[in-house]
Every structure is written in structure tokens, then in C-alpha cells.
Image (cartoon, rainbow, N blue to C red; front, side, top):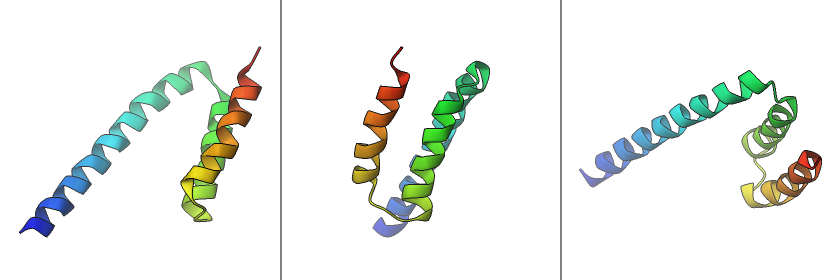
Amino acid sequence: LVRGIIDGTAAAAAGLIGGMALKMSDALFVRKAWRTFAFLALAFVGVGLLRWPMAPVMLVLAPLSILLARP
């Protein structure tokens, strides 16, 4: 019973995260921020496809994105 509750809660959380990602991506399409999509793709490839740990990927990509965002 507890396992089913936890699985259902995890599915609901994944749905909420997906919905929030779609809402946030809508603003990116309006501004056509190609750099944002590039870093999003790099993070997806590193964590999702190559199965690298998230912390090192973020520790590399976050400073690079901040550096490129500076005027």
C-alpha cells in the first residue's frame, strides 16, 4: 500500500515538473534565446543520455552560461 502511494506521488511530481518546464519554455520561444536551448541540450545530453552525475554537469554548465550571459 505504501509503495503504491509513493509511486503515485512520484508520478504526480513528474507531471508537475513537466508542466512547469512547458510553461517556462513558452517564454524562451518568445525571446528566441538560442543559448538557453544550447545549455538545456548540453545538460540533457550529459545527464540524460550519457548518465553523468548532475552535480558535476551543473558545476560546469552554470558558470559557463553565466559567463556567456554577461553583456
